[in-house]
Image 1 (tube, rainbow, N blue to C red):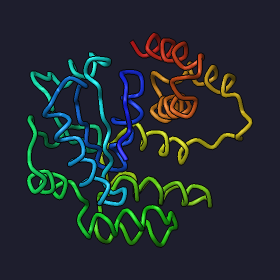
Image 2: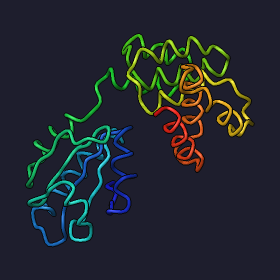
Image 3: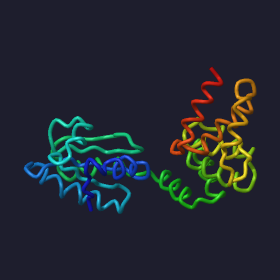
Image 4: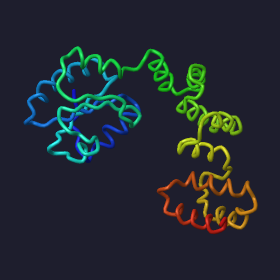
Length: 234
């Protein structure tokens, strides 16, 4: 069954969802005859995937921001997204066998399905099994690092994290591995004490940055402490 998406729900229902499953966006309008032809066809084909592909529908008359984002010139216009990026698409009404080919091209391979199953298991053994198949899989490395940190094997966690490029996710997990402060510490005193050393002491500077990662961007103190860090460094 297709999900009706609006400008307000597009981020959650399309961009965010596409990180876990391919999402097809069908842009249409009530007055569009070819849209009424294509709609039932694409719904039938996507429904047959059993949830391995998700279909969302966007009424372009009611949601102009989405149309502008896709730079739609005519409808029906169909786009496929994976991991937040458009990977395929077409314009116009096509017969079922063409739509079937389009959807088949988005289906996860046997290897991808195996990895998804192992990641969903979420155990040390399953994460290590994923890394045997795909050594640079970020989800497996982050998941394994979290488990290692939970049992105090912080150095090993950092070794795994070093295998892949740094990202927002890996910075936070690496910070957990490096910062040895009681969970109930509010960080203020520690950060204030570190400020005098951040310019000349690499370890102090790293600890300061790691604590800010753990606090996160939503903590109102983070921005203020970042400004103080910048002032001390430059």
